[in-house]
Length: 412
Figure 1 (cartoon, one colour):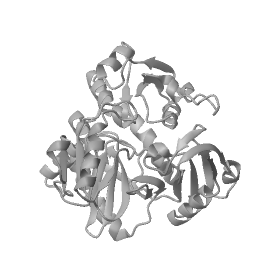
Figure 2 (cartoon, rainbow, N blue to C red):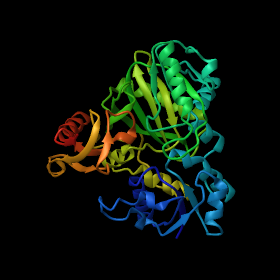
Figure 3 (cartoon, rainbow, N blue to C red):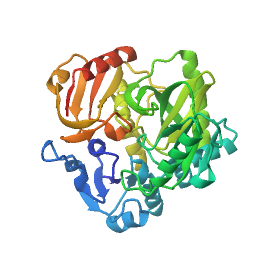
Figure 4 (cartoon, rainbow, N blue to C red):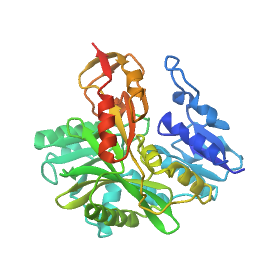
């Protein structure tokens, strides 16, 4: 039996990946600084998600390959994997030290730093929207690329710290806010750089891909509906996206060009872009499978499990890959519950009603109550979700939006 080490995870829900590894016949070691953070609160109840791990190892820091190595010690391993952004590089560095499969680390470093990936692709001759990097607020009183522009951390995630600036005053406020944030919500020390990007018009979408012996295979395209002050947070995800054949072909050509030039060569990729009058324009390449439940939508819609694929790849095993892009027999939509006003959330009503609705496959409240809420800014503001399935993307989206409307938030 092969053994694979999981280095943390993006969320408690991400621990389901341990069950996937077990179903594939692998022994799992879960490496974490604080395993207890993944267990449900006493009020929430439910099963212990860590029960799927064969062994739990505590490391002093899972941001460090050396600390991971010290924690695992001489245990025999056949693979190492991380699904969360902040642990991709130390996991790969540790895998390299053990002679195990891993992604090109320089490419991962570019993938974790949005500014470095944009610069790399531009140098490779790939068309890029205008961008610049600012690391000193006093030295940049005005936007180097004009207005409107987007200002965000070069290496954070979850739609955290994203600002739109329309003038010099707004730009200075945005840069100051980004540079003042030294730590991510997961305790990762940020690079202290603000990425300034051209504000792109168009519909935001993403492409989901996996690495194969023949290069990158695009599994399909995902649609999203965004919210928040500048529309940066996805409150609805649908796979597959409803796009024309011509638009799909154009997107696939662009995504392949981005990925082929990126240097990434193991695992999955989640490529975000906007489709507008000038065709697809890159937002960012995430060197991992999509989060926020999107990878689960791919599995539900197509019966192909990208998580199982990358786990098998991490230990050097083959996992069957259908012809790509996938041809899903149905569509799946994930709609997130969020507050539209500020206050203290005391209760959420309607869960039983939502779960009984036709086409709803799953629904839950994920927030510990009571809690302070406000209009949505980041992915950390989600309160719950609905997952709906139907014959096509428009129908699954309609069912999911109808179901989310049945929740009632008790806010004072």
